[in-house]
Length: 339
Ligand code: NDP
Image 1 (spheres, rainbow, N blue to C red):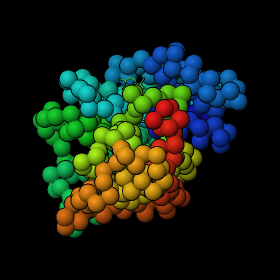
Image 2: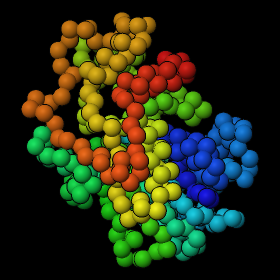
Image 3: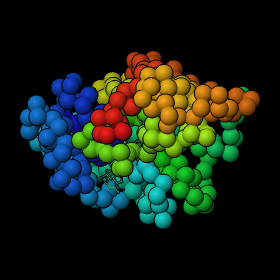
């Protein structure tokens, strides 16, 4: 299958790309610069030009940014849209988070409808951020499913970077479903909603200083940032990047995944479980970790909401790695870049 993957330089997208190539798909991925394209190309020496090529899209927040990228020979059948800002160093929530998330998503869908009628399936990387209701806190009596939507408003979105990020994912995913309903394009949509994504970084794109947001608490743990407290535990649920990437590809391949939203999570983690996994498997970091008898780092008192991942298992055949395996592989990948 001929696939367009947006944001190929991202942490999650790099794993999606690997799985697409392993399964014999032919991929064009968008990146912001030729330099990033070169790095990805060098890391995949076995992939031919036919298997892997690039389109430069400098800024997904620009109207029409994807107009050229969606056109290819042979034409695309699948588009996987992962590109979206995920960081909290923002000065302007609208410009830095909301615009690229929302215009990026509606922009790629508009370009497909206009210029790529061969596309039959679009997969969008959304987030648990678009499911969770932050006002409910740990909400132990609730089970989150794909039926839940973050009720964040336009006004609240501007409050702070964390709310802005969650709003960017919520509004972007809603805009995607609205587009399909109103525009009735040739493709069906599938969205994936992962919570915290952990797992090995790809060495050719990442460094310890410029690490993707969701792995930072593991880096900080082994670097000794948490000696008197534990790394943060929120949102208390997680998924391994390789399992999430696999489900992106399944969501593209499976007929039955169309018109569905998927809550993609293995289950629970907290700060203490991260530290325990590092302590057990990497004695060399012992002196950087909180003392074994340090209190805290657990789940909120009274418990925490339950995640329901049954749709991902049923429709996508999702299999989930354990937290310990994921943390071990993440730490190994960080060691490989000098941790
Ligand atoms: P990364 O920061 O590693 O990847 C983000 C990607 O988006 C990069 O390729 C980045 O390009 C690209 N991008 C961001 N803004 C723009 C822009 N304005 N124009 C062009 N490209 C842009 O993060 P992840 O891989 O973790 O995130 C990928 C997706 O997964 C996002 O949609 C994110 O919201 C979602 N997600 C991630 C979770 C996590 O825990 N990691 C959890 C839930 C959802 P560049 O590198 O050049 O800046």
